[in-house]
Amino acid sequence: MTTTTNHTSELDTWLPDGQVVEDVRRIVESESQGRLEFDSGTIRVPSGTDYEVVSKAFIKQPSNIGFGSCFRAVVAIGEVTEASGILESKFGFATAWYSESGSLITTDFSEVAPV
Image 1 (cartoon, rainbow, N blue to C red):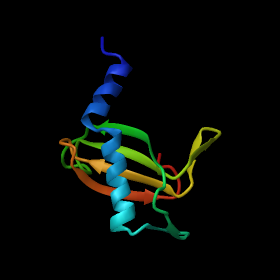
Image 2 (tube, rainbow, N blue to C red):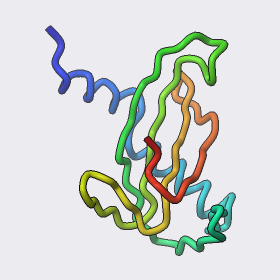
Image 3 (tube, rainbow, N blue to C red):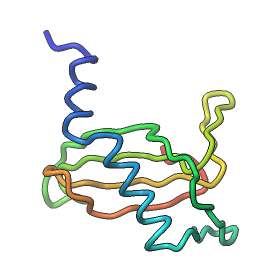
Image 4 (cartoon, one colour):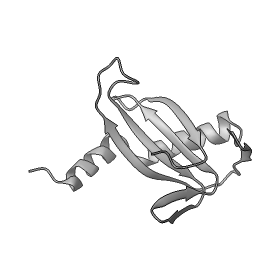
């Protein structure tokens, strides 16, 4: 029987946290020039901000739905706090979507932790 620990280890092998953090950092610091646009306004993310992977998943679905089977990683941008089981981050969250081969497809940003 395979344990959850084995699945977590395999997920970390397929999509390492370091890769996810560096992809999100590059997008925020280089491509977005440290600015994130939210409905509430623009947030400036200073260089040197901490990034933390808060969840990763492999999603199995037919190829004609969304990105097909893919990886999803949620990254907190800035210090992470938790209140009553709800995560908050100083600057927001990034959801990075990866192909089955580990190539970054796209990244979405939000002020609140995605479900």
